[in-house]
Amino acid sequence: MSSTPDPYGPPPGWPPLRRPTNTLAVLALVLAFVLAPAGLVLGVVARRQIRETGEQGDGLALAGIVVGAIGTALAVLGILLAFLALATVAGSFAP
Image (cartoon, rainbow, N blue to C red; front, side, top):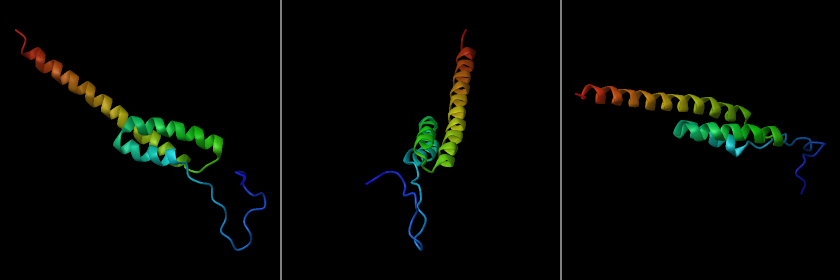
């Protein structure tokens, strides 16, 4: 069985052939909400695969990148603010 599409398309009356959706693109969007850095990385990998294979899902991968980047930036900002607050509180108890 050949992996190249039929140059003539489907027979009359049949639905058009659809390209499959890249699995990593779907995972990128899902993981961007659960584990933002993983969604960011998977989105980048999925877009690279989509360019090579011609699959669908470029929008999903891009959304995973954007949501993952925002989530990662917010997490890093939160960690920095927590350390700053901890240092401020610890400094106020110093003699």
